[in-house]
Length: 448
Image 1: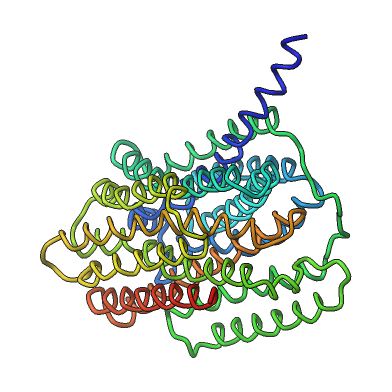
Image 2: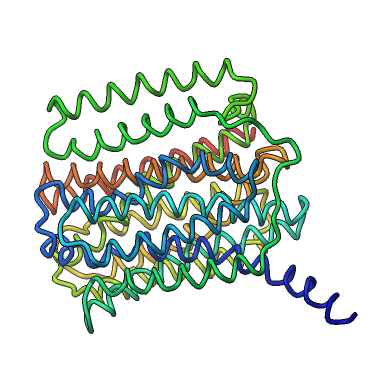
Protein backbone atom coordinates (compact mmCIF):
# COMPACT_ATOMS: atom_id res chain seq x y z
CA UNK A 1 0.00 0.00 0.00
CA UNK A 2 2.80 2.39 0.92
CA UNK A 3 4.61 1.90 -2.38
CA UNK A 4 1.41 2.49 -4.38
CA UNK A 5 1.00 5.85 -2.66
CA UNK A 6 4.68 6.76 -2.80
CA UNK A 7 5.13 6.18 -6.54
CA UNK A 8 2.51 8.74 -7.74
CA UNK A 9 3.79 11.20 -5.15
CA UNK A 10 7.34 10.75 -6.37
CA UNK A 11 6.26 11.27 -9.97
CA UNK A 12 4.43 14.49 -9.10
CA UNK A 13 7.54 15.76 -7.33
CA UNK A 14 9.72 14.98 -10.36
CA UNK A 15 7.30 16.31 -12.98
CA UNK A 16 8.25 20.04 -12.80
CA UNK A 17 11.94 19.19 -13.11
CA UNK A 18 11.28 16.91 -16.09
CA UNK A 19 9.10 19.54 -17.79
CA UNK A 20 11.79 22.18 -17.18
CA UNK A 21 14.35 19.93 -18.88
CA UNK A 22 12.57 20.67 -22.18
CA UNK A 23 13.71 24.33 -22.48
CA UNK A 24 17.19 23.26 -21.32
CA UNK A 25 17.52 20.79 -24.19
CA UNK A 26 15.80 23.09 -26.69
CA UNK A 27 18.12 26.03 -25.97
CA UNK A 28 21.19 23.80 -25.81
CA UNK A 29 20.37 22.56 -29.29
CA UNK A 30 19.36 26.04 -30.48
CA UNK A 31 22.79 27.50 -29.63
CA UNK A 32 24.92 24.57 -30.84
CA UNK A 33 25.95 26.11 -34.22
CA UNK A 34 26.71 29.57 -32.85
CA UNK A 35 30.38 28.87 -32.07
CA UNK A 36 30.92 26.35 -34.87
CA UNK A 37 29.26 28.35 -37.65
CA UNK A 38 32.46 28.96 -39.68
CA UNK A 39 33.40 25.24 -39.54
CA UNK A 40 29.85 24.12 -40.32
CA UNK A 41 29.51 26.51 -43.27
CA UNK A 42 32.84 25.37 -44.76
CA UNK A 43 32.03 21.68 -44.34
CA UNK A 44 28.64 22.07 -46.02
CA UNK A 45 29.91 24.33 -48.82
CA UNK A 46 27.63 27.21 -47.83
CA UNK A 47 27.16 30.19 -50.16
CA UNK A 48 26.61 33.87 -49.20
CA UNK A 49 23.27 33.31 -47.43
CA UNK A 50 24.13 29.81 -46.24
CA UNK A 51 25.39 30.85 -42.78
CA UNK A 52 22.20 32.86 -42.16
CA UNK A 53 20.06 29.83 -43.01
CA UNK A 54 22.28 27.54 -40.92
CA UNK A 55 21.62 29.80 -37.93
CA UNK A 56 18.05 30.78 -38.71
CA UNK A 57 16.40 27.55 -39.87
CA UNK A 58 15.63 26.35 -36.36
CA UNK A 59 14.04 29.68 -35.43
CA UNK A 60 11.92 29.47 -38.59
CA UNK A 61 10.68 26.03 -37.56
CA UNK A 62 10.03 27.19 -34.02
CA UNK A 63 8.15 30.34 -34.92
CA UNK A 64 6.08 28.68 -37.66
CA UNK A 65 4.44 26.10 -35.42
CA UNK A 66 4.74 27.36 -31.83
CA UNK A 67 1.24 28.79 -31.66
CA UNK A 68 -0.14 25.69 -33.36
CA UNK A 69 1.65 23.55 -30.78
CA UNK A 70 0.17 25.62 -27.96
CA UNK A 71 -3.36 25.02 -29.21
CA UNK A 72 -2.73 21.31 -29.72
CA UNK A 73 -1.22 21.01 -26.24
CA UNK A 74 -4.20 22.70 -24.59
CA UNK A 75 -6.78 20.66 -26.47
CA UNK A 76 -5.18 17.24 -27.06
CA UNK A 77 -2.74 16.89 -24.17
CA UNK A 78 0.34 18.80 -23.03
CA UNK A 79 2.32 15.68 -22.17
CA UNK A 80 1.44 14.07 -25.51
CA UNK A 81 2.64 17.10 -27.47
CA UNK A 82 5.86 17.44 -25.47
CA UNK A 83 6.79 13.75 -25.78
CA UNK A 84 6.02 13.69 -29.52
CA UNK A 85 8.14 16.78 -30.07
CA UNK A 86 11.04 15.28 -28.15
CA UNK A 87 10.94 12.17 -30.32
CA UNK A 88 10.98 14.21 -33.52
CA UNK A 89 13.94 16.21 -32.16
CA UNK A 90 15.90 12.97 -31.76
CA UNK A 91 15.33 11.94 -35.38
CA UNK A 92 16.05 15.42 -36.79
CA UNK A 93 19.29 15.62 -34.80
CA UNK A 94 20.55 12.43 -36.44
CA UNK A 95 19.78 13.90 -39.88
CA UNK A 96 21.67 17.10 -38.97
CA UNK A 97 24.67 15.09 -37.79
CA UNK A 98 24.78 13.18 -41.09
CA UNK A 99 24.12 16.15 -43.42
CA UNK A 100 26.66 16.83 -46.18
CA UNK A 101 24.91 19.76 -47.90
CA UNK A 102 23.28 22.99 -46.76
CA UNK A 103 19.71 22.12 -47.89
CA UNK A 104 19.71 18.85 -45.92
CA UNK A 105 21.15 20.50 -42.82
CA UNK A 106 18.71 23.41 -43.03
CA UNK A 107 15.77 21.01 -43.42
CA UNK A 108 16.97 19.08 -40.36
CA UNK A 109 17.31 22.27 -38.31
CA UNK A 110 13.83 23.36 -39.42
CA UNK A 111 12.46 20.02 -38.21
CA UNK A 112 14.37 20.47 -34.94
CA UNK A 113 12.68 23.85 -34.59
CA UNK A 114 9.20 22.42 -35.16
CA UNK A 115 9.93 19.69 -32.61
CA UNK A 116 11.26 22.26 -30.15
CA UNK A 117 8.05 24.25 -30.53
CA UNK A 118 6.03 21.26 -29.37
CA UNK A 119 8.40 20.71 -26.45
CA UNK A 120 8.21 24.33 -25.28
CA UNK A 121 4.45 24.71 -25.65
CA UNK A 122 3.71 21.43 -23.91
CA UNK A 123 6.23 21.83 -21.10
CA UNK A 124 5.33 25.39 -20.12
CA UNK A 125 1.67 24.43 -20.26
CA UNK A 126 2.40 21.58 -17.84
CA UNK A 127 4.27 23.89 -15.45
CA UNK A 128 1.64 26.63 -15.61
CA UNK A 129 -1.20 24.18 -15.08
CA UNK A 130 0.52 22.50 -12.11
CA UNK A 131 0.58 25.61 -9.90
CA UNK A 132 -2.11 28.17 -9.04
CA UNK A 133 -1.24 31.85 -9.34
CA UNK A 134 0.97 32.85 -6.44
CA UNK A 135 4.45 32.29 -4.98
CA UNK A 136 4.67 28.64 -6.06
CA UNK A 137 4.01 29.52 -9.68
CA UNK A 138 6.54 32.38 -9.48
CA UNK A 139 9.19 29.94 -8.28
CA UNK A 140 8.26 27.32 -10.88
CA UNK A 141 8.27 29.73 -13.82
CA UNK A 142 11.50 31.26 -12.51
CA UNK A 143 13.16 27.84 -12.60
CA UNK A 144 11.71 27.23 -16.05
CA UNK A 145 13.05 30.56 -17.31
CA UNK A 146 16.43 29.82 -15.74
CA UNK A 147 16.71 26.73 -17.93
CA UNK A 148 16.70 29.02 -20.96
CA UNK A 149 19.82 30.74 -19.65
CA UNK A 150 21.44 27.43 -18.71
CA UNK A 151 20.72 26.00 -22.15
CA UNK A 152 22.35 28.95 -23.88
CA UNK A 153 25.41 28.35 -21.68
CA UNK A 154 25.58 24.60 -22.21
CA UNK A 155 25.07 24.63 -26.00
CA UNK A 156 28.11 26.69 -27.03
CA UNK A 157 30.35 25.11 -24.38
CA UNK A 158 29.50 21.55 -25.40
CA UNK A 159 29.61 22.40 -29.10
CA UNK A 160 32.95 24.20 -28.82
CA UNK A 161 34.53 21.46 -26.72
CA UNK A 162 33.33 18.66 -29.00
CA UNK A 163 34.52 20.57 -32.07
CA UNK A 164 37.99 20.75 -30.51
CA UNK A 165 38.26 17.03 -29.75
CA UNK A 166 36.05 15.50 -32.45
CA UNK A 167 33.88 17.41 -34.96
CA UNK A 168 31.11 19.98 -35.13
CA UNK A 169 28.79 17.05 -35.92
CA UNK A 170 29.32 15.42 -32.51
CA UNK A 171 27.06 17.90 -30.72
CA UNK A 172 24.07 16.84 -32.85
CA UNK A 173 24.63 13.17 -31.99
CA UNK A 174 24.64 14.16 -28.32
CA UNK A 175 21.42 16.18 -28.66
CA UNK A 176 19.75 13.19 -30.31
CA UNK A 177 20.76 10.89 -27.47
CA UNK A 178 19.53 13.36 -24.84
CA UNK A 179 16.21 13.72 -26.68
CA UNK A 180 15.66 9.95 -26.61
CA UNK A 181 16.34 9.91 -22.86
CA UNK A 182 14.05 12.86 -22.15
CA UNK A 183 11.21 11.36 -24.20
CA UNK A 184 11.45 8.11 -22.24
CA UNK A 185 11.52 9.83 -18.84
CA UNK A 186 8.70 12.23 -19.78
CA UNK A 187 6.46 9.39 -20.93
CA UNK A 188 6.94 7.67 -17.58
CA UNK A 189 6.90 10.59 -15.13
CA UNK A 190 4.61 13.30 -16.48
CA UNK A 191 0.86 13.29 -15.92
CA UNK A 192 -1.38 14.34 -18.78
CA UNK A 193 -3.28 17.63 -18.61
CA UNK A 194 -5.43 19.47 -21.11
CA UNK A 195 -7.93 22.30 -21.25
CA UNK A 196 -11.39 21.51 -19.84
CA UNK A 197 -12.78 23.51 -22.78
CA UNK A 198 -11.27 21.90 -25.91
CA UNK A 199 -11.79 23.53 -29.30
CA UNK A 200 -12.05 22.25 -32.86
CA UNK A 201 -8.73 22.32 -34.71
CA UNK A 202 -8.41 25.56 -36.70
CA UNK A 203 -6.96 24.28 -39.99
CA UNK A 204 -7.22 27.61 -41.92
CA UNK A 205 -5.58 29.46 -39.04
CA UNK A 206 -2.75 26.93 -38.83
CA UNK A 207 -2.01 27.10 -42.56
CA UNK A 208 -2.25 30.89 -42.85
CA UNK A 209 -0.15 31.65 -39.77
CA UNK A 210 2.56 29.09 -40.53
CA UNK A 211 2.95 30.27 -44.12
CA UNK A 212 2.89 33.95 -43.11
CA UNK A 213 5.67 33.48 -40.56
CA UNK A 214 7.72 31.35 -42.95
CA UNK A 215 7.40 33.94 -45.75
CA UNK A 216 8.35 36.80 -43.41
CA UNK A 217 11.46 35.08 -42.06
CA UNK A 218 12.52 33.83 -45.50
CA UNK A 219 12.17 37.32 -46.98
CA UNK A 220 14.27 38.94 -44.28
CA UNK A 221 16.89 36.18 -44.45
CA UNK A 222 17.30 36.54 -48.22
CA UNK A 223 17.39 40.33 -47.83
CA UNK A 224 21.06 40.08 -46.96
CA UNK A 225 21.85 39.97 -50.70
CA UNK A 226 19.64 42.96 -51.51
CA UNK A 227 16.22 44.15 -50.33
CA UNK A 228 15.01 45.01 -53.83
CA UNK A 229 15.40 41.50 -55.24
CA UNK A 230 12.11 40.02 -56.53
CA UNK A 231 12.33 37.01 -54.21
CA UNK A 232 12.64 39.29 -51.16
CA UNK A 233 9.87 41.69 -52.19
CA UNK A 234 7.61 38.78 -53.11
CA UNK A 235 8.19 36.96 -49.83
CA UNK A 236 7.53 40.04 -47.71
CA UNK A 237 4.41 40.93 -49.72
CA UNK A 238 3.15 37.36 -49.37
CA UNK A 239 3.75 37.52 -45.60
CA UNK A 240 1.68 40.71 -45.36
CA UNK A 241 -1.21 39.23 -47.39
CA UNK A 242 -1.21 35.96 -45.44
CA UNK A 243 -0.99 37.82 -42.13
CA UNK A 244 -4.00 39.95 -43.01
CA UNK A 245 -5.90 36.86 -44.16
CA UNK A 246 -5.06 35.13 -40.85
CA UNK A 247 -6.48 38.02 -38.81
CA UNK A 248 -9.63 38.12 -40.95
CA UNK A 249 -10.11 34.36 -40.65
CA UNK A 250 -9.58 34.35 -36.89
CA UNK A 251 -12.17 37.09 -36.39
CA UNK A 252 -14.82 34.91 -38.03
CA UNK A 253 -14.04 31.64 -36.27
CA UNK A 254 -15.88 30.80 -33.04
CA UNK A 255 -12.84 28.79 -31.84
CA UNK A 256 -9.76 30.50 -33.29
CA UNK A 257 -6.16 29.31 -33.17
CA UNK A 258 -5.28 32.62 -31.51
CA UNK A 259 -7.98 34.37 -29.53
CA UNK A 260 -7.64 37.97 -30.77
CA UNK A 261 -9.45 39.18 -27.65
CA UNK A 262 -6.22 38.47 -25.77
CA UNK A 263 -4.74 41.56 -27.41
CA UNK A 264 -7.14 43.63 -25.31
CA UNK A 265 -5.19 42.52 -22.24
CA UNK A 266 -2.30 44.90 -21.47
CA UNK A 267 -0.32 42.09 -19.82
CA UNK A 268 -0.60 39.96 -22.97
CA UNK A 269 0.58 42.86 -25.14
CA UNK A 270 3.55 43.47 -22.85
CA UNK A 271 4.47 39.77 -22.78
CA UNK A 272 4.13 39.21 -26.52
CA UNK A 273 5.61 42.52 -27.68
CA UNK A 274 8.42 42.18 -25.17
CA UNK A 275 9.19 38.66 -26.39
CA UNK A 276 9.43 39.94 -29.98
CA UNK A 277 11.96 42.57 -28.93
CA UNK A 278 13.92 40.13 -26.75
CA UNK A 279 14.23 37.82 -29.74
CA UNK A 280 15.19 40.54 -32.20
CA UNK A 281 17.59 42.53 -30.02
CA UNK A 282 19.08 40.06 -27.54
CA UNK A 283 18.91 36.67 -29.25
CA UNK A 284 19.43 38.15 -32.72
CA UNK A 285 22.56 40.04 -31.70
CA UNK A 286 24.07 37.23 -29.66
CA UNK A 287 23.52 34.78 -32.53
CA UNK A 288 26.20 36.62 -34.50
CA UNK A 289 28.47 37.54 -31.60
CA UNK A 290 30.54 34.30 -31.75
CA UNK A 291 31.24 34.66 -35.49
CA UNK A 292 32.33 38.29 -35.09
CA UNK A 293 34.62 37.37 -32.19
CA UNK A 294 36.20 34.49 -34.12
CA UNK A 295 36.67 36.32 -37.40
CA UNK A 296 37.42 39.79 -36.01
CA UNK A 297 39.25 38.94 -32.79
CA UNK A 298 40.78 35.58 -33.70
CA UNK A 299 39.16 33.62 -30.86
CA UNK A 300 38.83 29.83 -31.14
CA UNK A 301 35.40 28.16 -30.93
CA UNK A 302 36.14 27.01 -27.37
CA UNK A 303 37.35 30.47 -26.27
CA UNK A 304 34.23 32.00 -27.79
CA UNK A 305 32.06 29.43 -26.03
CA UNK A 306 33.67 30.22 -22.66
CA UNK A 307 33.05 33.94 -23.16
CA UNK A 308 29.48 33.30 -24.27
CA UNK A 309 29.08 30.93 -21.31
CA UNK A 310 29.89 33.80 -18.94
CA UNK A 311 26.86 35.71 -20.23
CA UNK A 312 24.48 32.76 -20.19
CA UNK A 313 25.67 31.43 -16.82
CA UNK A 314 24.90 34.78 -15.22
CA UNK A 315 21.53 34.72 -16.95
CA UNK A 316 20.82 31.31 -15.41
CA UNK A 317 21.85 32.32 -11.87
CA UNK A 318 19.96 35.62 -11.91
CA UNK A 319 16.81 33.93 -13.24
CA UNK A 320 16.92 31.48 -10.33
CA UNK A 321 17.33 34.32 -7.82
CA UNK A 322 14.87 36.69 -9.49
CA UNK A 323 12.01 35.78 -7.15
CA UNK A 324 13.85 37.72 -4.44
CA UNK A 325 13.57 40.94 -6.48
CA UNK A 326 10.60 42.65 -4.84
CA UNK A 327 9.11 44.18 -7.96
CA UNK A 328 5.95 43.48 -9.91
CA UNK A 329 6.55 41.22 -12.90
CA UNK A 330 6.34 43.99 -15.57
CA UNK A 331 8.73 46.20 -13.57
CA UNK A 332 11.16 43.29 -13.20
CA UNK A 333 10.94 42.72 -16.95
CA UNK A 334 11.66 46.41 -17.62
CA UNK A 335 14.65 46.33 -15.25
CA UNK A 336 16.04 43.32 -17.10
CA UNK A 337 15.67 45.09 -20.44
CA UNK A 338 17.37 48.21 -19.06
CA UNK A 339 20.33 46.17 -17.77
CA UNK A 340 20.58 44.37 -21.11
CA UNK A 341 20.67 47.69 -22.97
CA UNK A 342 23.30 49.07 -20.59
CA UNK A 343 25.44 45.97 -21.02
CA UNK A 344 25.20 46.08 -24.79
CA UNK A 345 26.87 49.50 -24.80
CA UNK A 346 30.07 47.66 -23.85
CA UNK A 347 29.85 45.80 -27.17
CA UNK A 348 29.92 48.95 -29.30
CA UNK A 349 33.60 48.31 -30.11
CA UNK A 350 32.92 44.68 -30.92
CA UNK A 351 34.19 44.78 -34.49
CA UNK A 352 37.29 46.86 -33.73
CA UNK A 353 40.57 45.90 -32.09
CA UNK A 354 41.62 46.87 -28.60
CA UNK A 355 40.88 45.57 -25.13
CA UNK A 356 38.37 42.81 -24.51
CA UNK A 357 37.54 44.26 -21.08
CA UNK A 358 34.56 46.42 -22.20
CA UNK A 359 33.12 43.41 -24.04
CA UNK A 360 33.48 41.15 -21.01
CA UNK A 361 31.95 43.80 -18.72
CA UNK A 362 29.09 44.32 -21.16
CA UNK A 363 28.37 40.59 -21.26
CA UNK A 364 28.32 40.46 -17.45
CA UNK A 365 25.76 43.27 -17.15
CA UNK A 366 23.60 42.11 -20.05
CA UNK A 367 23.74 38.52 -18.75
CA UNK A 368 22.25 39.66 -15.44
CA UNK A 369 19.59 41.58 -17.35
CA UNK A 370 18.79 38.56 -19.49
CA UNK A 371 18.17 36.49 -16.36
CA UNK A 372 15.54 38.95 -15.16
CA UNK A 373 14.02 39.06 -18.64
CA UNK A 374 13.78 35.27 -19.00
CA UNK A 375 12.18 34.69 -15.60
CA UNK A 376 9.69 37.55 -15.83
CA UNK A 377 8.63 37.03 -19.43
CA UNK A 378 7.87 33.37 -18.70
CA UNK A 379 5.69 34.42 -15.79
CA UNK A 380 4.01 37.14 -17.88
CA UNK A 381 3.19 34.58 -20.58
CA UNK A 382 1.39 32.37 -18.05
CA UNK A 383 -0.34 35.19 -16.15
CA UNK A 384 -1.52 37.10 -19.22
CA UNK A 385 -4.06 34.47 -20.34
CA UNK A 386 -6.91 32.54 -18.68
CA UNK A 387 -5.85 29.40 -16.80
CA UNK A 388 -7.25 27.04 -19.45
CA UNK A 389 -5.22 28.77 -22.18
CA UNK A 390 -1.73 28.69 -20.66
CA UNK A 391 -0.31 26.77 -23.65
CA UNK A 392 -1.83 29.33 -26.03
CA UNK A 393 -0.14 32.09 -24.03
CA UNK A 394 3.11 30.13 -24.07
CA UNK A 395 2.80 29.54 -27.81
CA UNK A 396 2.13 33.20 -28.60
CA UNK A 397 5.00 34.33 -26.38
CA UNK A 398 7.53 31.89 -27.80
CA UNK A 399 6.33 32.53 -31.36
CA UNK A 400 7.04 36.23 -30.89
CA UNK A 401 10.45 35.48 -29.36
CA UNK A 402 11.61 33.24 -32.20
CA UNK A 403 10.12 35.35 -34.98
CA UNK A 404 12.08 38.18 -33.40
CA UNK A 405 15.26 36.12 -33.21
CA UNK A 406 14.97 35.18 -36.90
CA UNK A 407 14.42 38.79 -37.89
CA UNK A 408 17.16 40.00 -35.55
CA UNK A 409 19.77 37.50 -36.73
CA UNK A 410 18.96 38.19 -40.38
CA UNK A 411 18.97 41.94 -39.74
CA UNK A 412 22.35 41.87 -37.97
CA UNK A 413 23.79 39.74 -40.78
CA UNK A 414 22.42 42.15 -43.39
CA UNK A 415 23.89 45.21 -41.62
CA UNK A 416 27.30 43.56 -41.23
CA UNK A 417 27.18 42.39 -44.85
CA UNK A 418 26.40 45.91 -46.11
CA UNK A 419 28.74 47.93 -43.86
CA UNK A 420 31.53 45.48 -43.09
CA UNK A 421 32.45 43.75 -39.84
CA UNK A 422 33.69 46.76 -37.87
CA UNK A 423 31.14 49.44 -38.76
CA UNK A 424 28.32 46.93 -39.23
CA UNK A 425 28.80 45.42 -35.78
CA UNK A 426 28.77 48.88 -34.19
CA UNK A 427 25.57 49.89 -35.99
CA UNK A 428 23.87 46.58 -35.15
CA UNK A 429 24.78 46.86 -31.46
CA UNK A 430 23.60 50.49 -31.33
CA UNK A 431 20.27 49.50 -32.87
CA UNK A 432 19.80 46.73 -30.30
CA UNK A 433 20.61 49.15 -27.45
CA UNK A 434 17.97 51.62 -28.64
CA UNK A 435 15.32 48.96 -29.25
CA UNK A 436 15.84 47.27 -25.87
CA UNK A 437 15.87 50.53 -23.91
CA UNK A 438 12.77 51.81 -25.70
CA UNK A 439 10.89 48.61 -24.85
CA UNK A 440 11.85 48.97 -21.19
CA UNK A 441 10.39 52.48 -21.16
CA UNK A 442 7.25 51.35 -23.02
CA UNK A 443 6.71 48.55 -20.49
CA UNK A 444 6.82 50.98 -17.58
CA UNK A 445 4.57 53.49 -19.36
CA UNK A 446 1.98 50.77 -20.08
CA UNK A 447 1.61 50.18 -16.32
CA UNK A 448 0.88 53.82 -15.50
